[in-house]
Length: 165
Image (cartoon, rainbow, N blue to C red; front, side):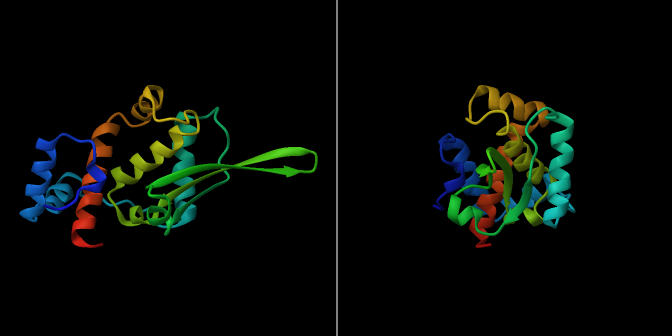
């Protein structure tokens, strides 16, 4: 029985279905059929532009982003798929804040919907720090299918772990 570290907290009948798909080597096929389109956002600059477009569309009044990039160490070091940080420093007599979003590099070659879900998640943290009801409502405002995409992203990561990628 494989460990399903990305699916903790889900009901056992659902986990059993996932285990069966993994045992039959069908999970990857199911996901590929559901999400056939890979994105073209490969570089950090393209990721910044992609994130900025979503931010300008949904969060025009929020704080500006200073940096958006892929991070090779993110999943291993932070146990996260994306992070948002606010770095404050004194510049002259004023305090200057710099906002950064980092996306795990595993999403550099992922289905487009999964990258969008991660970016939406991190952008929502610009307005809502905690994973609460308001946070998830904002995520669903930016991406109506957010909850399904989050679950399917967890399935995708489970498939990658199962294959050893």
